[in-house]
Length: 253
Ligand code: AMP
Image 1: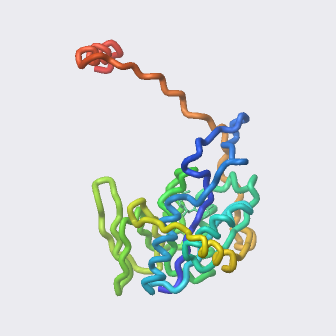
Image 2: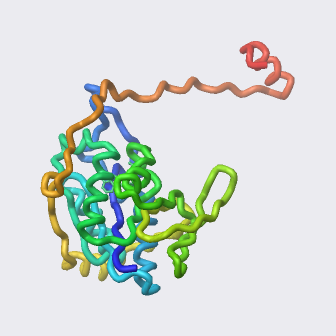
Image 3: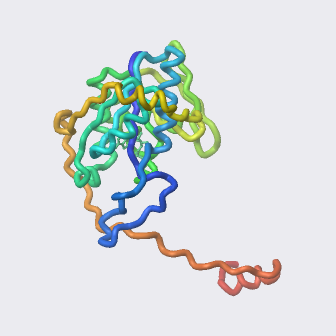
């Protein structure tokens, strides 16, 4: 296996309380802490481990987004990725990009870079779409292994253990393939200071969607982004009888 392409998305940090913009066109991103999508850290870790086990020769981190997206590529390189590709999309245009656009971009890069494996996160924690890996596989017409819990290289390709509703499922797939990382695949390493310094010198190429020949015209209109309804306060009841009475009163039982 030669190259592994890893998708790293810059998202609002998981610990930040997301706020809707007053004009309801989206969420507030300015001045808000961003980081690499947590599932993408797992994807990077898996790719770097493959390189350490000599199952892969090169790990390329790709991020699509505005200028700041280069930051998460640097983080991926500090974790061990060899080089990066930043697909530069201005903020206003980026806000309208959908998983299908990202998938077409990743698919084109996978072919251009002659990747044998594309590893993505199972979902981005901002849009929660869980579509990009599946669509990238479809665009490439490659097999897919989603929600990976374990990835093993075999002579014929890969044996993948997937997290499914009922437990774990094991499948075999040929290479090239597109995989998506689930939470328990591994524990991502921290980028150490020396590696952060080294990452600054690793190659980072900048391209545009146009350079890749991908049409990023939006396919949907966002009508309105709104906060979820405020949950009503609960009440404490003295005992089970009072609870049952309350439930009856509310017509729940
Ligand atoms: P989603 O389908 O949006 O939930 O995203 C699933 C995965 O696709 C993410 O965890 C990333 O690995 C990859 N991905 C999505 N958007 C981007 C992006 N803008 N740049 C790089 N990778 C992305």
